[in-house]
Image (cartoon, rainbow, N blue to C red; front, top):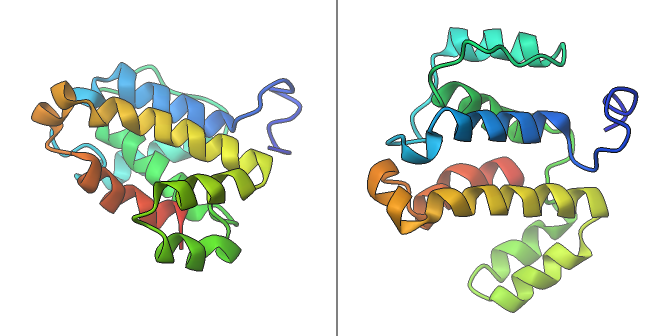
Length: 152
């Protein structure tokens, strides 16, 4: 957030998160089989990473797996995970308790909470039954591929 403060001073969310999420949807990721499970071409993901590091999104992307792979990588490489380490045990012990899950989210630092809520809202698009039929990525599959990037 500090790095983007000069370019996007009013943004409450990381530019990378919102731009890559938007690209996934713009390229039809919610209708792409195996989205977030099938990795994008590594050379194209690395090329996109170089562009994103310069605050650019190329306009020639055609495969939603490319920004989806980079988005997962971004979450995974955060210095502090979206759900900080001190909440790990509480999350693992209460994974079947929605009230406990909401309580953990409410305890997160504001930025972490905003990032997590944005991610959940984004993934809810993919979890819609009309999209699951195409992507084969139901809530369990989405959780399986995304949770390790947010809670480690």
